[in-house]
Amino acid sequence: HGIRLTTSLNVLYDHRDWIAALARKVAAEICPFDGMTELEKSSLSNRSSNMFTLSALHQATGAFLRQRRHEPLDAHDEAAALAFWKLLGELILTWGSIDRTAADLRHDYLHVHAVALHALGTVGGELVQRHPKDWQKRMRSLESLDWSRSHAQWDGRAIRNGRISKSGPSLILTANVLRAHVGLRLSPTEQGLEETLPEEQSVAA
Image (tube, rainbow, N blue to C red; front, side):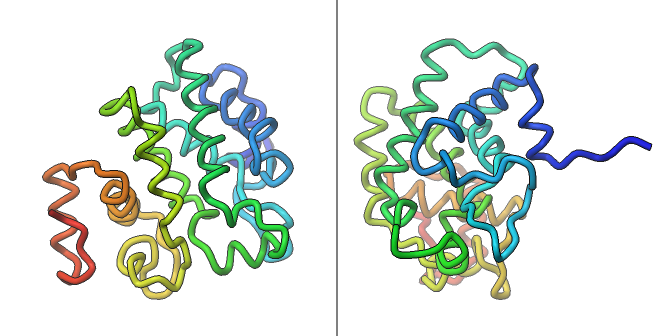
């Protein structure tokens, strides 16, 4: 009987997937992912000293590059993805906190969880596509974003019934907060989901 590999292990050993190769490079070279990414398991225990999983980083990198998994990436694509994750490492200061354990960060903050990474990758890819000349400048507004899980802006989005949700609507609604923060206009679908939330929580224009 074959052993079923975790998603992270599949990414670790998949040498045909360009996105997987790039995710491995981010995990090995970009702070704070280097040394803080679980390479074999696709979920983290409360005792884990890691903040991220390779599978989540792979999914988020694929979202940034619009899921062009089977198309060879050129040098520009790779450079943009590496610059994106490097800039986020500088902007999200609590990722590099030396006063908090990884378990504390996972407990208190949303930005270390897969839904947040996926949303970041999605919105980052949109920024590069729509604003190729100043996407990095626009991203700097994320430095002021409050990622605390207790913040009301995440209720009904990434947090549902007190638990982190990775559903499709949760991903879009989480990304909508980021879109509003960096000045991206919402699509009709994204705006429609905003209308399912209480008016005071909506970011829809």
